[in-house]
Length: 157
Length: 103
Image 1 (cartoon, each protein chain N blue to C red):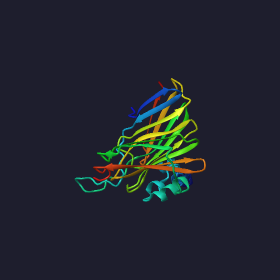
Image 2: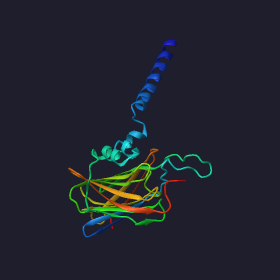
Image 3: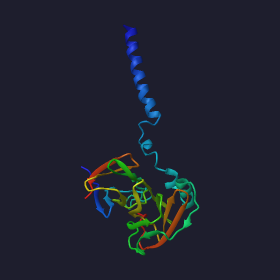
Image 4: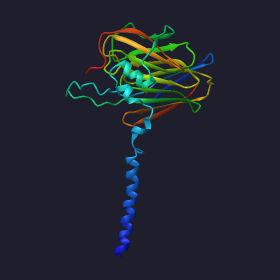
């Protein structure tokens, strides 16, 4: 009788052990779902560090082929519409950066095979600064920038 | 009920997809004006856009994207009636998916 109880107890603790291992290995943590989200890049305080982490290099060539559509003056820094477009071939990804923000890297878009090099979104800007667009092709990084004057910052409380 | 709005339009062989999501997009750096405490970060980290079950674009975001984010992108090769699916996941592990068809 005592022995049978001992068996049940053992089985119970074994089952619990399996769940524990799963959690420990990160199988159940939500963090692992986003394996591609580059924490280091998005938390970097400087653009070169962010680019290095995101695209493996911080050397970019200025290219007028990248068109940035953003307002000259943004009345509200909390909502600044930005569109990035280019006619370059073989674009792998596009990143949008607000130079003076605490964490400058705002968004990065990985383009699939059928996607065209065009993205449009709305960003927050802390103060007047450059909006930088970085375009990654197979072998090089290109960038262009446009200054946006911000009258009311969009990151403060 | 999902509150991602999707509009996908085919024009001259290119499909333009526009989506509007509803999310607070807190950076974690903003202070509550009443309590003077930092508002915890809560923002969308990843948006996956699919057309006909093929991933067309994956966007990675920081809290620097505006509240209730807007996203537009284009791709070639779509056809009227093809399904478009958009899924976001935020830093708390919450996720939302919506689907629509190309018109």
